Amino acid sequence: MNRSTGELREKARKDNNTKDAAVITEPINDTELYERASTIIKEQRCRAGSFANREITLMFWKLGRLINSAVLGNERAEYGKRIVSALSAQLSADYGNGFSKQDLYRMMLFAEQFTDNKIVSEPARKLSWSHFGELFSSQRSAEADRPLLRI
Image: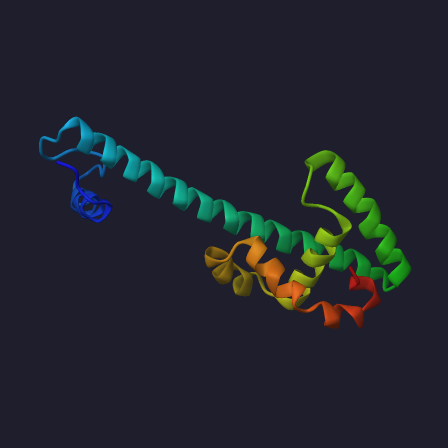
């Protein structure tokens, strides 16, 4: 018997009431076993992906906040450009893609727009860094007014 994903999820929810959600409370055939295992894998991967997206978004916010603090502490645009350029080269060498000058400027803008960790945490649960990036790409005209944040 082949059950729909919805039926399998409902069955898994009922099993959640037991001590272990993966425990089988009634006999099932090989196909059902495979389908239930697949459902567990898909659901857990989705949860892991959401958690990873949230943590990456928070990491980028913290990096933006750190860079803003360093740049604003000196209050010179040329100094800020030099810091961002040097930091980008170092981070890219050590950690790979995702730390270009443009990426760091986005992180800075992100931290500037969202000044409180509590404000960032909730949307970060539902939105990935790419979503936030799209929000900031629509603000490029505002960036043109700020030489330090020009991409």
